[in-house]
Length: 88
Image (tube, rainbow, N blue to C red; front, side, top):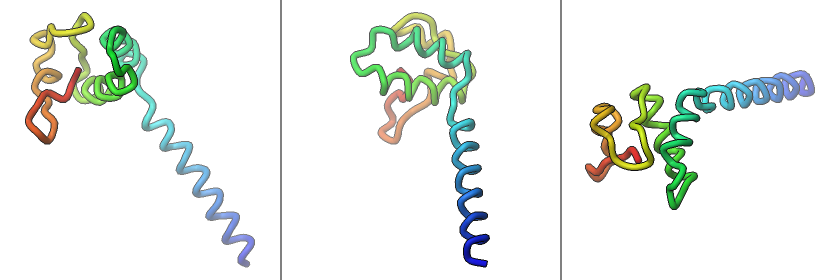
């Protein structure tokens, strides 16, 4: 009985981790747009992370590597806990 229960729990853990990977994966649109946006960033991994979060919420990323945030007001207006712009 314990072996069956342990096997079921292990199977559930494996399945839940595979669903987590799929849900955390970014869309091709956001990955490509954020790759362009963060091409010249000093801390590229952090830029890609926050750009991806903003892109998923807003479905747009401003053109260029800096500025142009008026092209995407949603992206421009997302703030962090300190009231500063969150999106790179």
